[in-house]
Image (cartoon, rainbow, N blue to C red; front, side, top):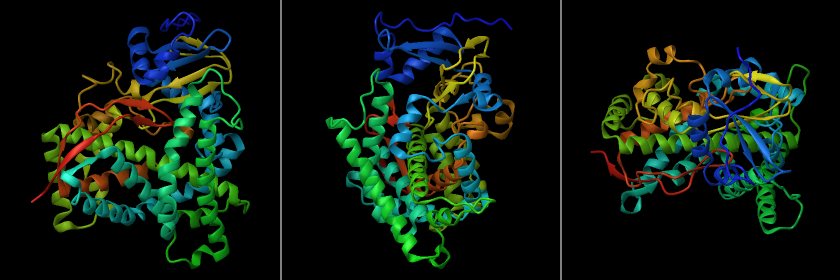
Amino acid sequence: MTVTTRVPGPAGLPLIGSLLDLKRDPLATYVAAHRDHGDVLRIQAGPPGLRAEIYLVCSPEGAQQVLATESSNFRKDNVFYGEIRASFGNGLLTAQDEDYLRQRRLVQPLFTRRRVDQYADAIGVEAESLAQRWAEAPEGTVDLAEEMSRFALRTVARILFGQDVEQAVETVHHAFPILGAFVRDRGFAPVRLPREWPLPGHRKALEAERALYAVCDGIIARRAAEGDAEERDGEDLLGLLAKARDEDGNQLDATELREQVLIFLLAGHETTATSLTFALHLLAKHPEQQRLAYQEAAELLAEGRRPTAADYAQLPYLTRVLKEAMRLYPAAPSVGRRAVESTVVGGVEIPAGADVLIAPYVTHRHPEHWDDPERFDPERFTPEREAARHRYAWFPFGGGPRACIGQHFSMLESVLALAVLLREFEITAVDTDVPLGQGITLEVRGPVRVKLTPRQ
């Protein structure tokens, strides 16, 4: 293999490189850079002396190398993870080394397929409640982005907190967008002023952070005062986390519990909400695919039956729709790492200490792996076609040892919710073009409205 240290990439503007492009539209910047400069390239952003260099890796082979085969050489030490850690705590998403291994050992048993399947009834309850609310929507029109965010938040909060769901939902719904925007803006800023400085944006973010911490700490403290979680009526995820022990008998303390809860709320509602929003948006624009999805859901869930975990395997077309939506609109459109030692990826030498970006949003559109990549086609995800593709041509849940622990939960929740909503409503797109942005997750920067027609 020929190795080069002269890395291609966009020139950008003379003094600030690609900084404005990244702030204005990072996803379009990544796609254009890949088109013009190949599978491994360098993007420079910021003024001299403060310039950041990002090595963008776009091929499935490169993604596998960074996330899996050489994962120990690529750490979560970049600016964005530092900002997430500062706002949301050091939970599974951001923890590293022994902290991460300890947390993973404690939490992994709570996300087995068997355990997650027990959450299906809570998913069904929230999906039915949403359908009832939609039946009374003014003028029969709803904004999918807003509706799916609330649905996914209510669902994960119900599973986390059980009877305490209402106490948490409004605070989280208000605080998370504020903190997400704060993290995004600091991540792209060439200079990051100390968080404790009393600037308006800093004060607003700190207030949101305090509100989040207070609601989680309050629920955790009340649970501790109530005694053994086994005596509660059912077991929510917070109770299970509080009881979790590793092989040495260690458990999470109150601060660690809060940090895990915050990360579960973040990862468990924003990502699923994004996937549901775009699955419904795409179906609303493609009547034939919607008809097929409706037929599958209506035949399985006849006479208003609530879905169960066993129904998930009986909804293969809806699963293909969801996977295709996640290909076009991955909730985590880019994933950052920092190289520990100099290494070669795709024939390009990446130096020690370099920021490396893996971009599912780009790889999911790679023309060597996806024909007509912008076209919505759920048939890309038949078992035969999936087996024929590179493992990392589609990786919305990441990969390697840091792959998302909640993958089955997200898929189960999304497919069952889609089945309930499509059984009840025909949907037609009002907004056909949706402006995108990127914060901690993929952002919708405008309404995603659909017209609802109740099924007869």
